[in-house]
Image 1 (spheres, rainbow, N blue to C red):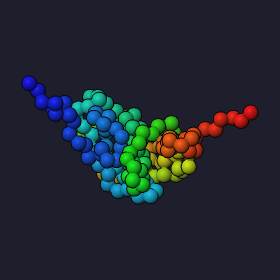
Image 2: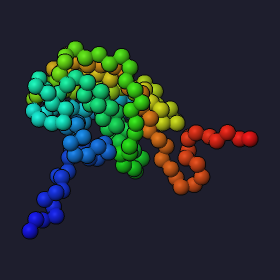
Image 3: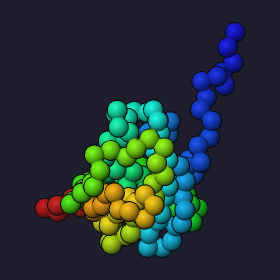
Image 4: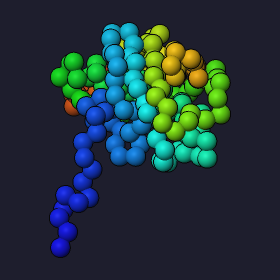
Length: 164
């Protein structure tokens, strides 16, 4: 007979910061988090969903940056008594990677600086991924975090119906 806990995943250090779980939780920790930005860390895994022969493909840096922004948002939600919520990556602009892949075992720092966070949940972040002070990838992210519904009428700051 198997125990029901055999299928349970152990808590991940980022559970309190991001809504991502299991194999899709890519960050390993937060180095610093402030009002205007955040620095997270990633140890590039030797095996995983996004690994190739040379490590983790550089395009995964877009997700590293998005999860770093999600951690910043999660910290703000926790500060207000809430928990991390699902947000949406709307786009990545000017993503440039200096390497084709992040090598397995590499310690990366992911920096996300809030350039704009509007009341309607739209945001813009300037991000970069570094290893030992060398910028490996950089670019901007556009994000959207839907306003939390209060249960009273339409969602705050949501789209308005056209009045006739």
